[in-house]
Length: 259
Image (cartoon, rainbow, N blue to C red; front, side, top):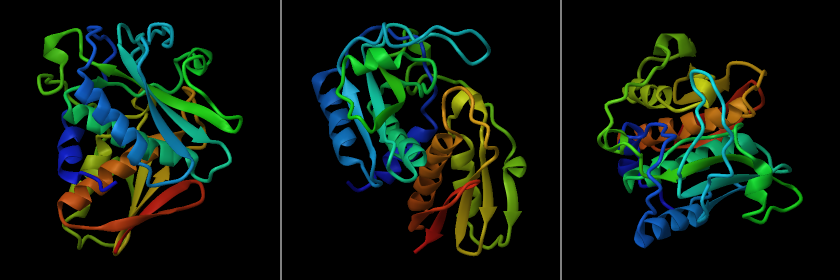
């Protein structure tokens, strides 16, 4: 499917993580649209997304800490599943999954990436998983319990590192598209807000790298970087810059080459 760059780009700045839901079930035309994007948005092999039309109360674990609160009363959730034999599966899952989440945001649905604190055995009772597949992450979808936290209403601020901390090398400052693209990537969500992406700026490219081999929180840093990859590309597209992704070896994740 062709990326709806304008809609998804705008959704970047409307999306925020939401854990407390009203239990309200989305209308059929909304869930049908989510299922369509799950089925059709698959630019990289080895990853699939499934909307699970089952209550998620038994799926999410409780946790404590600054970033961890149990998801409650979500009517449905989306599962992001990866083929463990596929190359670049974690980065691909982040990229593809964020596309589905941004589509949900355009439809007024709240979401929240959850990579570690959920019961995989409970998910596996509700969907079919092949022997070589793994549930890499899930996201509740629905409407926030509090009206003030719903899409378009929330005034929550992003807590992110300064861009200067994230750029590790810069060969060129010519491209006017580079700074806004990096800003879109900078505000991407990540596990425990760890923001593992780092950027190398070339003449006609931006390389996304991981900051560390240490994973933690049950989520690959490459998955986080895959989310940032989509954000970066969306900004480039709305500014008329088309490119393609070249996957790289660790600690680099992928390079966006202008075409």
